[in-house]
Length: 189
Image 1 (cartoon, rainbow, N blue to C red):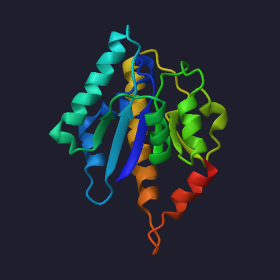
Image 2 (cartoon, helix red, strand yellow):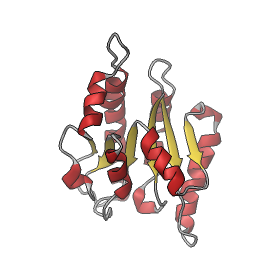
Image 3 (spheres, one colour):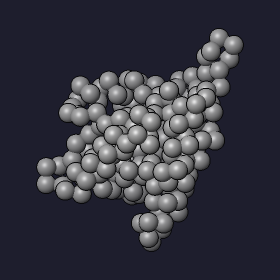
Image 4 (cartoon, rainbow, N blue to C red):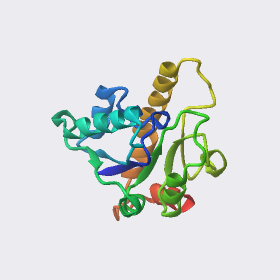
């Protein structure tokens, strides 16, 4: 299955649960029998960050849910060792911070150095790193006064990109079963 990774410190502005905004649409994406998708989450929150801990609990509950068909995973005991293998082993790196809060985004940089394209908000390093061929941009530069409206707009953009561009490109295989278009994006990353 096409594997999307999200691993970092769990702070509310990083919006780790943005992918769960529309559960029906998410289930349609991940449970497609011809083009399955799975998400792997990992990370820790600061010990005093209760809202961050709640984000982890929410994702963990989705990972246990039978409705998600085993396509959501939360890797416990996140450390540099786990991060290393995730950045080498996923097909796409997901970054969903609330603009303009992302200071740099080193996890996305490290994924890119491993040939993993990014699907990210245009913030942090991605403002300078994105060139139109090495990954995808979630949303646009529109700044909403309401966080709920911003989250919904970004989630819809993310779903559209995953459904209409990213997953079809990954599963478009030649007669040798090689996704040539996807490989080009990886090389550019």
